[in-house]
Structures are given as C-alpha cells and as structure tokens.
Length: 283
Ligand SMILES: [Zn+2]
Image (cartoon, rainbow, N blue to C red):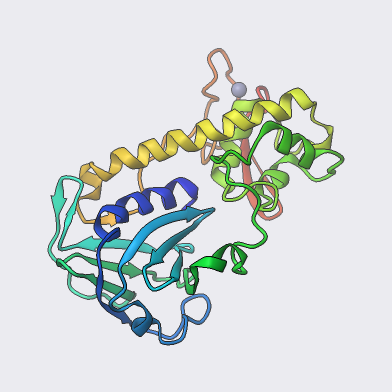
C-alpha cells in the first residue's frame, strides 16, 4: 500500500507532465472506484489546464483553472502510468489498454496518464478548490508531518493523557496526517520506543525526539523515491513503488541493525496490523 513517500513520489513524477498542461481528453471507464466517481467527471476535466499538483496526507490534489480540484487517492494497488512523454531518462510509448485502466487523461502535447487499479480501493473526486480543505476526505486530518504545524509541542500536547499505544497514536490521522504502518514502525525503532508503550506514559523528552525522527524517516524515503524516478526501475513508466531498506519493517526473525545488538526483530499484531520492533533497543 502506498504510504506518504510513495504518494509524494507519484506527485513529483506527474508534476512535470501535468502542471501547466491542458487535459485534452479524459476517459472515465467506470462509474466508481472505491466510491462513486464524480458526476460528469470526463466533461469536467476536459479542456482544463492544470495549475499545479499538491499533496495532503496520501491525497494528490490537482488544481484546475476552472476552479475545481481533482482529488486522487491511490488506495491499495493504484498505479499511475505515464506514456508519450519523458519520465526521468525515459520516454515510453502508449501501452496497450489494460483491463484495470479506469481513468485515462490525455494531455495536450501527447502525454498520457493512466490510472490503473486492480483492487479498486483507490478514489477520485472533484471539489471546488476554494473549499477543498473542508472536503470530507481532508477535513479531519491533523497537520502534515513535514509541515510547520507539526511540531514537538503539538505532539506532546496530543499525547498527553492518552492511554492508547504509541503505535496507534502515531497512526491516528487526527494527530498527524499521512503516517502509515511502515514509517511508524521505522520511527519507533529509531526513537527506541516499544510500539506497545502507552502514548501518555512516554516522557516528554522522548515524545519530542520523535518529531525530527518522523521527518527524517519520511524525507529519506522521499529521497529514495526521487532517485527511483531516474532509475531503471521506472523504465516501464510506472510511478510510485520503489525499493526500500527498512530497519525493522518486514524483518521478523532477522538480526537487529543496531551495532552491537544481536536481538532478533519481533512482530506483534496491534489493532490488526503488524508491528516490527527490536525487544532490546525499544523500551
Ligand atoms: Zn536492537
């Protein structure tokens, strides 16, 4: 499932192809993805110039010059393919249409963006740009982890008195937006905090220490995604998925990466999701 760094990588990959360009033709091949697609979606997109692409949490927001914004969520398996234009060092011819190509945007100038989503957990909507922050997908979200509103004071404030495990608190989108399972596991490892610790019982000093770690973990992953845009792995024109080197995520039974620590990484299930951690390094 794409997390914030993958979504940011997709946004950065789409930006040079879409920003400033006009959508010459929009093809919407089904009435719904996870939820119904907006009414007259193809008509509302056709002829619109893309003013810019933003990201909020795991949503890509595509602002159009007619005053609407296209909201895009990749869901579990959504992929964006770019063809007919330069992507990094490569230019790809248009591929043969595939069964799960649900939305296809042909830009003036020849670039094509294809949204393919086999499992259809993705979602798109159109809303007035002026009120998009109040859209139901965005309204309840906490601050962006890479933005100025996400501060050490904010996290201390939001953790105070909370009895939930720190893992759940960091996944709570009202506390911080866009953090998912993988990067929460990685953050807690670097912070040396056990995922089952009660959020409100962690010392203020350690809560503060998590803020720069969250930023660092995400920025490193975004940087890895950025280099993958130029990499041979993107040779098929597909955006959004790239190789990572995780410290704990997916490493159950393997030796901890901390120098001198020989413990094996453990996995526990919290709220139905796997948490990976080192029993020695994380307390
Ligand atoms: Zn360890």
